[in-house]
Length: 130
Image 1 (spheres, rainbow, N blue to C red):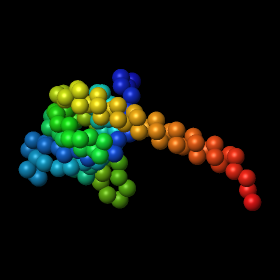
Image 2 (image 1 turned 90 degrees about the vertical axis):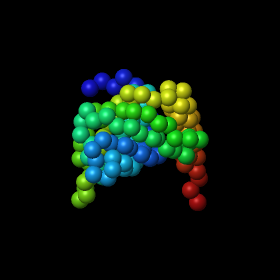
Image 3 (image 1 turned 135 degrees about the vertical axis):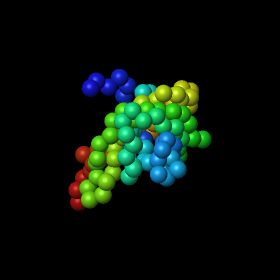
Image 4 (image 1 turned 135 degrees about the horizontal axis):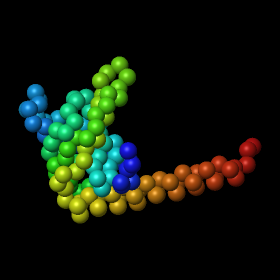
């Protein structure tokens, strides 16, 4: 499978509304990454492939959650000793401006972290051991 959009690691949560779920259709997941095409999440409840969901993405990088609709495109069990499902969702309906803003913030912080890592590596290489 060829990726159309780059993925950005994202700390945050996803509130999901899933039709016909035994928890009144509402549950939360951990946001793993996001792109202009969709997002990946980890959660303890499995959602079937091709299920349409409503979602609310939350992150400390956002002033307010991003809401929209998506379709589950892949599901795999990814837990050790406990069932955790890694699921990928493709956007069906989302505020594109809000998504662009979020991804631009992720890009900025990703580059800032990378620069800090490079600086730390340089400083380690020039340290004089005593």
